[in-house]
Picture 1 (tube, rainbow, N blue to C red):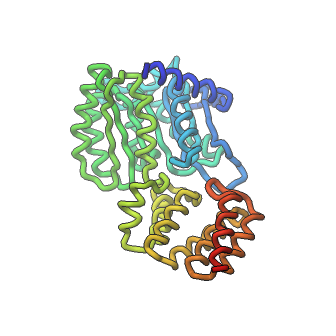
Picture 2 (picture 1 turned 90 degrees about the vertical axis):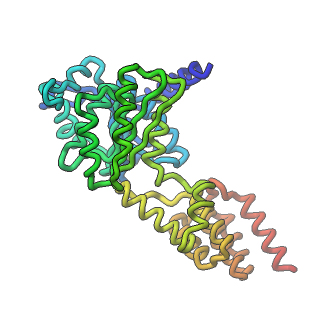
Picture 3 (picture 1 turned 120 degrees about the vertical axis):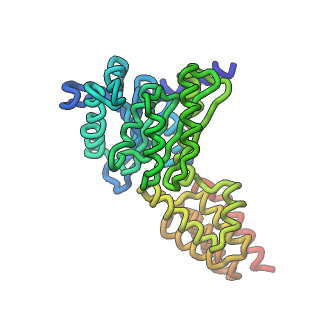
Length: 382
């Protein structure tokens, strides 16, 4: 029943995404021909905005694109991960040639070398020239393609910041080469690998062996994660691994949850507002793009400020919300909260009244503003 449900969900996602995907054909001098692409843009993508988006390359896009793009669309909708541009390369008829490597050197040769250059020297520039792509790039692969993505790590300056390898069919010496390369990386790099108990026997064995070696690497710039799924085969593990990989890669980006609130925010040596500032600065540093302030994080910082009786943090937060959301009830709500905490109930009441003329947010609507008005008015009358 569980497998049937996952299959049904996958088909549902696939059917819904087909109408959203952009289908392109790109001419390639490297491949001496054309290659079909699938591209998914964020829901509210606006080419006129200054904002840029992480770019996710999907090899074996004939079957990997839809589940990956569906997960990204779903998780970004709930603000768990950023909006991303997803680019898939169709390889149904060419994958053996595309991933070809030399039997002695075990590095791409012939058609494999051409595909390697196509992606780095033609496809990437094409996407960057035509879409609002940031410098934070992720690449996904499965078995043969999961081995191939590793070759981009051996460039002097790797073009990807995150690598997702599902049940990789590793070339000879790849594990040792990975160990050497990942040990000396100087830029923060995410590496995720997965297998499962019912994976193809040889691939499972080599993946587990690779994990034993890679897990010993000591490099503060490397963020390595591994999963060994139960009750999953070579194909089902992909469906399980996609959201796990995204969660690991964008762990810092995620909204402040209850655990982070208790264990990090409340125990932070600085003020709650300083915690918010640092969190968003770290996100920009790690991912190369600025995260827009979200209501979930505003609520967490306000709660911590109130709990710590930190009036200055609450004031700074209210001013930031006013700046970021001048037309939203959020600005009136948090300014009113600050004035209440300060003891200036008249100013608080005025803010709440002004809030009735503004637009509701995800959590603050007319009913909440009215409730705050009545409570403040009652306090004034006491």
